[in-house]
Image 1 (cartoon, rainbow, N blue to C red):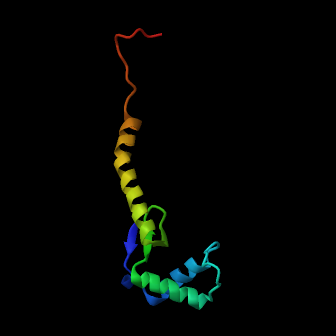
Image 2 (cartoon, rainbow, N blue to C red):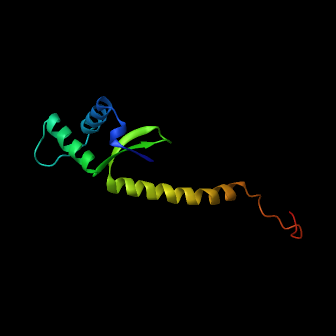
Image 3 (tube, rainbow, N blue to C red):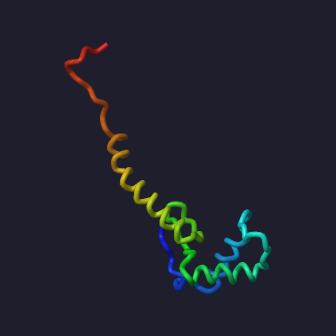
Length: 105
């Protein structure tokens, strides 16, 4: 997962990402309903304040918005998976153990 600096995006692309995120089903803004413009304004403040970040996942080739805490968790999980991966590869490629002195059936 890669964090994309806000400044690297064109205004048009940033607008499209924010709208796509806001319009996703299930996005909850609490008890009061906000207009699309209000939601975009709130989200832009969170992006500019660093509370929400834009990320790109090269594996899935998806771009999304995450809270800073969600990004930290995702990066920790990614690091843990990368540590476990070499061990899994070794176990998958290892030949089965065979004792030549053990009687064969």
